Length: 315
Length: 297
Image 1 (tube, each protein chain N blue to C red):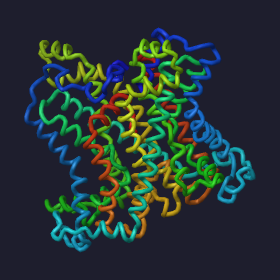
Image 2: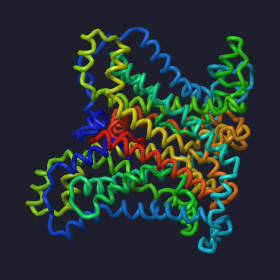
Image 3: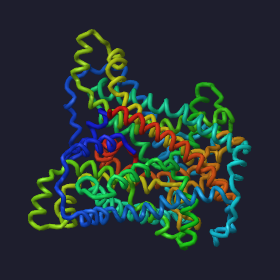
């Protein structure tokens, strides 16, 4: 769900309708014919699985049931009941919110600062900066996680070697209960700030230059212009980025999978990772479905809030 | 959403819309902003450089203290072992097959629905639009288990169709093409209708040719998204011969090759290099597409 798409819809609904192409049912048939590939694939691989996932979360589905899915046994709310008292699940939930709570504001703040600097602070090398900062966004998280794990290696990693050269004994970042998650957050911010930057640059370009000229005539400096022109004008974009980044970060998986395997002592275990472990390492697909559904509801609530915010912006 | 709306307005050629001079006068840059930006740039590029340097180092150079910065005896041995011992050509091939198939599906099916949503009136349109929107909120994890059970029962685990089918059409491409198609004048379509063309012909012969720049953006982003995707192929490709590159790299890096830094850096480079080349060639189309829709591929 994107902001432009939503606004586009309302614009289109107000615009004059294109002329009809024939009688009622023929028109409908044409529309559905064009929609058919999406509808079929969507139905088979998304809509039905979402319902099946819901059903599975009330069963004890496991590896044996794979060959005969109908034969699994219904266990009512057992899975959800067990989740409530599953300390590891709560730990994964807390970890995920820690990641989101620190990672999202950092990503947006740094992305916005760089976007502002590129849009209004400098005139040279802008393409080079934009390309450079964007680079990690399009590269595989797995590759990046492998490289960062090496950078963070306690003995031979670049970071500790650099610290060592100025006489500081660097810690074992990923083996420390307190430092593992901040290390993963740093990597996620590093990887995603370019995405925020590009969206913010687009938003900044829509702010009329006359506002900045007026501010500068009123004697506003760089910081005041940022505070009283950029921030308020950019509010919808910031809100939009806030929500989509949050939804993305809630699904944290690759980074801990490659870098820490959820450790040390579950300090970096995320909800998606716990779901993966239950579903594909312990083969408790029923229980894993319940975990997936809890995450789904959290994401849906946040997406719903996004809808509310966007609607109020339109009005 | 005024800010994004403006950038999301239909444009004929996304690659050219963001002109350098369009925003008028701005305060002159000062040296400290450049300094900070260059420092940041070094932090962004640094890990990639380290990866390239690491991929060229023989194992002993990782073990000396302090480790060498530039490789003293650069070698391609790490790549050799990837290709001889670990079957990376096969993983590379798998990734390519999946990414190309998914890309072709998206640049065909997305504009079809995009056209129907932008230019046709039919009952059910609003419902489908709502479904497309809803699709974007669904976490990948929720469909993973049912899809695995389904693929398992269809015998499609460890097959290309199993890796490809669910991704042949995505909401991102539907948005991108729909937004663009709003900008196509109705008169153009009307003229074709008066000439007796049916909707399918109008779509193929009038709409699609105009849409090519957007399809290029969509194609690039879809390819990158598929090339990098991990969780789904991790579950669906369980036999090593069906591994995609990310699955292979993650599996080896957390398994027996954990400490083989040179080979892991070489593997990361093999995974990242095609993307870097595509990005450098098409960077404008990529960042435009993302700014327009606010979505990653």
